[in-house]
Every structure is written in structure tokens, then in C-alpha cells.
Amino acid sequence: MSIETKVGSVTFTHNATYTGEVEIERGGLSVKVSMEALQTIVSDKIRQRMHENIDSMKAHEILALAASKK
Image 1 (tube, rainbow, N blue to C red):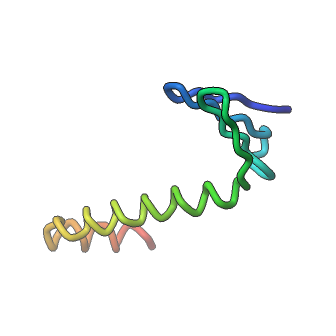
Image 2 (image 1 turned 30 degrees about the vertical axis):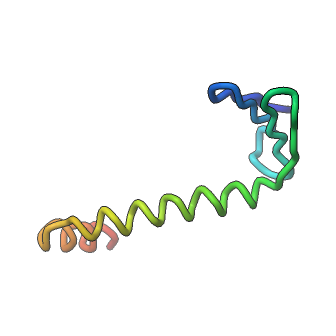
């Protein structure tokens, strides 16, 4: 089963299990990329934001975050 997600003028078409290839279409042009490639680029962006957020956290906030991982 295919799922189509629109973000502005961009359409992403992928299967319901979030595996395999994703077709990305915009303005009549399309490209297929692996879901793994998209997951990698998005996780890298999230990692970058997390680093930025940690840099601005107070000591007690970092300790609370570490304690919640148990």
C-alpha cells in the first residue's frame, strides 16, 4: 500500500511500512531514493539540533535527562 504525503509543493510517495524506495516529486520532476538515505539525513539533522540544545542546557537539566534514561 502506497502513502502519499505532500509538504508544500513536494510530494513523497512511499510504502506503508516505511521501507524500500521513496519517490520525491516537485514541479514535474521526480527522483527515487531509499528510505534508509532519508532516515540517515533526518537523523543527522536531529542529532545536530540535540547537540545545540545540550550546549544551552543548565547542569540540572542535563542531569535530569541522564537520570530519565534508566
